[in-house]
Length: 44
Image 1: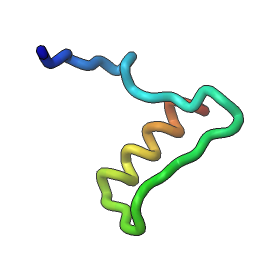
Image 2: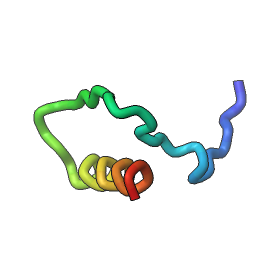
Image 3: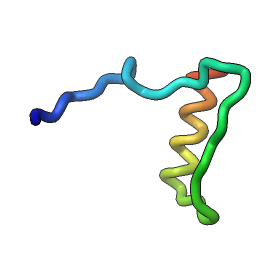
Image 4: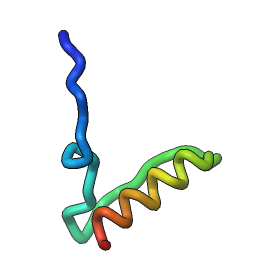
């Protein structure tokens, strides 16, 4: 199996009104940045 290079077009988006987010009890700075990026991409 070969690795594929991902682009910004491959990053996840929230596309439905209802979604479930799961995670852990602790949130790191990297996790916080990932959530902020997801919401920025999804909702502008």
